[in-house]
Amino acid sequence: MYITITKQHLGKTFSQSSGDFVDYLEKENRDKEPELQEHFFDQHHDHVSPKHVIKDIDGNTAKLRKNEPKFYSLTINPSQRELEHIANDPEKLRKYVRDVMKDYASSFYRDAPVPVDSIKYYAKIEYERTYKGFDREIKENQPFRKQIVKLEHDLVKIRRGELQGNSQDIQKTIEQLKAEAPHRINGQMVGQGMKKPGLQTHVHIIVSRRDVTNTYSLSPGSSHKASEVILNGNPVKRGFNRDQFFERSEKTFDTLFKYDRNFVESYSAHKMYKKDTYKFYAHLMALPTNEKSAAFKIMGKAGMHVPNLHIPTNQVQLALKAFKQLKKTIDVAKDAGSIGI
Image (tube, rainbow, N blue to C red; front, side, top):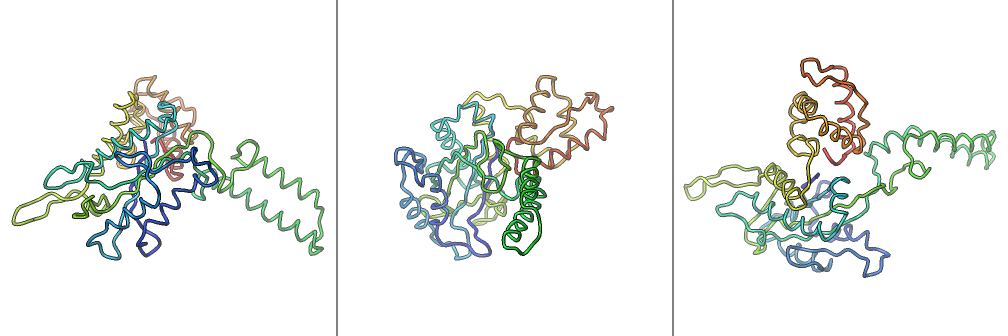
């Protein structure tokens, strides 16, 4: 499970309306019959119109300065393994989102517990993802794409009489480069904007910066971590506990759907890798054989190209060369935004 929290932000200025974001989230509904469209939903309603979402979020901004975010965007990205476990069921995802928002509310530090009904939010399920420029597949195909573009320009010049050359030979070279590109789908070279294969279901959530009464701010921003302030002469905790939120969201999925989470899928493993990669690797190699085997399969499916290493489980004998090779594959997947670790 990979969850992100992003503040409303466009370039160097904050947009004063949620309209553009809501319109973006409607992209999969375009050209679809009404009965096939996915609708916004909240804690208690399954069908909320885009106009209502915009009006409600934009009208809930009391006392916020012009350069402050008016809302936050949460994205819930289940791994393909998690989606397979729940059979990619949108009803189960909606149930999960509503429970996750309870975890979100309980992760705020306030004078009193924050109930989920204090959170003004609207969620939308999407089923597709497209390749972006930062994806590993796009980066690794880029040298081939660059050569193809040059050759295609040469073909145009030959047709115009601006360049001498054999058009058929150049076309054969183009087709050969397309065939040699490392990443293809159904014989077609992977490029930006192409739909990603497999289960890609995820959920976007737009959350108002203010509570439902438009009285106080509930910011999950990284600059608002749990801290203690003095209010009326007394110390009071304020802020948002991100670690708690991510850990509880993961546990909620496991409990709700009886999911047996592997070590490498856990938020704790992700943190361990970032803080102490050697500890992460040692923990991975110390797993029982069946769990370790599953871990390597999961990482491989996430696009990490894990090598077939024969490494002794004795930590003293761990081969440094093999470790560096594995670490490199994890770094590549991490840079590409892989989900599942």
